[in-house]
Length: 50
Image (cartoon, rainbow, N blue to C red; front, side):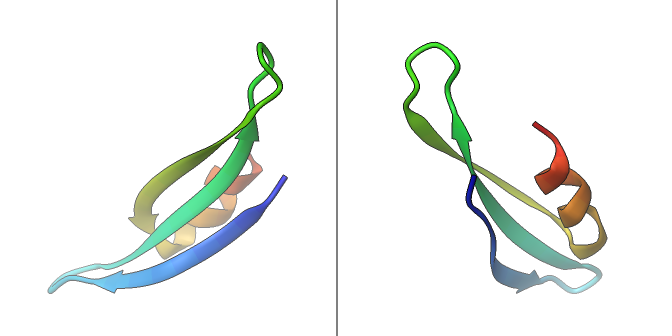
């Protein structure tokens, strides 16, 4: 499973990060990409979830 933090986005009040992880579909076996924008301290928790 690939995990990567791609970009750091800044707004006026918060520092946000866009994270992308590759998820394997249990039905077809194909890989899809799941993207989310969140604060930097939440990235590791989000990547560790299945």
